[in-house]
Image (spheres, rainbow, N blue to C red):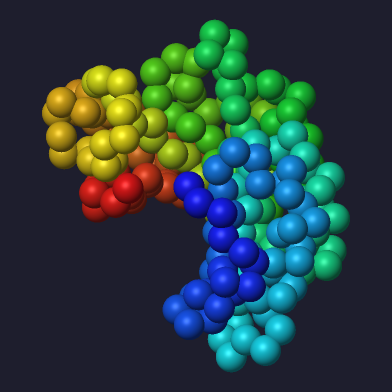
Length: 193
């Protein structure tokens, strides 16, 4: 990564005519004030309608709610699960309750081997009208330690293709069963760093 001044980033965004600015990596809501400044300044004088999207683990959900009151922000909550115990039922219930109040909030649930091998009960209990905002994402399993390679699902030396294929099949099955949405890590298929 490199440090980029906000004005330079805004110039680049305006030149690209991008309609969506996605902020992810680490925990972007630790920079809530910066997000508000960046997205507000991006919309001023913009010829194309635009909005921001933040992917968060949901720990700072109150910051996301505050931002949604002021700017056209979409929030994708992708909570982290404990390796042995899975997702926190209480945390997921809170996310679902918040989604009911905020139509620009989405939930992304990872699907793969245990403890990710099912849709958590708190998600299953969500009202059906939220289903179109619940995304299941199959986990890509790496066969070797990631050492700066370009993500590539087609490389058997990098990706455990058998396990990853099972994860994709399970996610697709659960999406069809529960009428959720499927989201894929497209950079892995397109060989994009």
